[in-house]
Length: 217
Image (cartoon, rainbow, N blue to C red):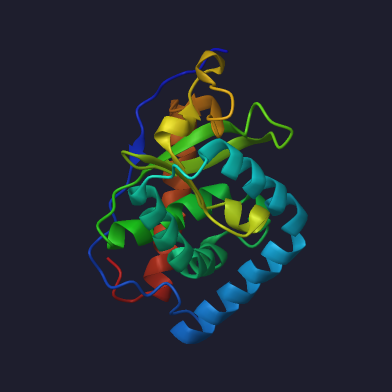
């Protein structure tokens, strides 16, 4: 399957204090509300997640690296703040289920505040390509670090942020390894149309931050 490899888009947020829950609610209220939403989604998607975790266990067989476990723990802790920031910045006529771009922007911003650079990428992906749980998302936007694929928009789908080591990510069909590959990248985009689209929404995201976070520059 042909895949277009592309230059990634990187955004480094300014070193300001994380105040993603500054709009209309206190930090505690926002975190509690975010936790309730995530818990509800976990309950609704429990059957799917149970199968998902069984497959993950079969694939990973307890071999998840320590650095991946630490990142998963961190992303679980940051999930309410990422969701709150996504809800605040996403256009009102967008469904959160299809707001992967704003989930990625929010996740990238919050990670950058903690000194963790993440590249924003777009295209199409297929989760668990060689299993009955295969699930494609296209078009899609996600984040990548030097070691991990991070999908913050898994929150409205499955109730958690997907963190996958790049060793378990295939970038073409021939690279899929049964019982190991957890994600196949079907397409990667970095064409001018995509870059303009991201730039426009990034500018909008920044405008909302300036309104809701006076200290943001």
